[in-house]
Image (cartoon, rainbow, N blue to C red; front, top):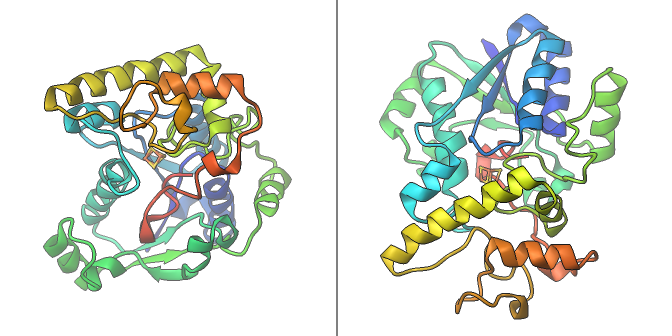
Length: 289
Ligand code: SF4
C-alpha cells in the first residue's frame, strides 16, 4: 500500500504532504503533481522545493497536449460546462498512472469543507473510483473496473474540517514556507491564470509582463482558430466584468485585454463579478488549488 498526495503547489495540499509524512513516514509518501504547462514558474519551483525539503518522491505527470496546445487543438477555452482542462490535464494522466501501478493506494486530497457549500457535502473518505461504480465516469472504464478488482484506491481528506488559517499555521509551524504567489495576492495557485481566476488575481497577472503577454498571445491564437470555425469565445466567460466594458464581442464575453483594462482601472470589484467557488470536479476535487 502506497500513500499518494495530490500535490498542486497550493497550501491545502502542502498541509496534506506534511500531515502524511508525519503519519506514514517520508519513504512511504509520493507526491503527485500534474503539470498543465500553464503554471507560474514560482509554483513549479515550490513544488520541487517542498518535496526536497521533506525528502519525498515527486512524480510529475503531463498529458500529451498541455494547456495551450489543448485549447488551440480544441479551438475553445474551458468553460463551466466544458471543464476539459482538469479532465485532460489532471484526471486522465493520474488515472493512467494509477492503472500502470500494481499496488493499492491511499490517495490524500487537500479539500476543506469551508471552501464552499458544495465541498462541505463531500465525504471525508471515499473510493477514488466511486463514479465508475455509479456509472458516472467512463474514461478507460473497463480497465478501471478490472484494476479495481485486485487493487484499492481509497481517498482520504485529512484537513477536511480545517480552516484556511489552520492550514497556514500548520505549514508555518512545521518550518515550511507557503507558495510565494499567495503573498502577491493569489487566492489559488494552480494555472496562472486559471480560467476561473478572480478579478483580484487577474489584476496581479495584468501587472506581470511575462504572464500577461502569454495570456494575450494564447487568446489570440485560440480566437484565430475559432474564427475560422465561425464562432467566437474568449478565455474569460461572459459575466466576468460588467457588459458595458465588453466592446468587442456581440455575445459579451470579454476579451483578455478588456478584462485587463477593467481590473487596472478598478480596485474594488463588486461581488457580482467575482466567481463563485469554481475549480475541479466531483471526487477529483483538490487537483486545482
Ligand atoms: S487550475 Fe483552472 S485552468 Fe488549470 S486545470 Fe484547474 S480549472 Fe483548469
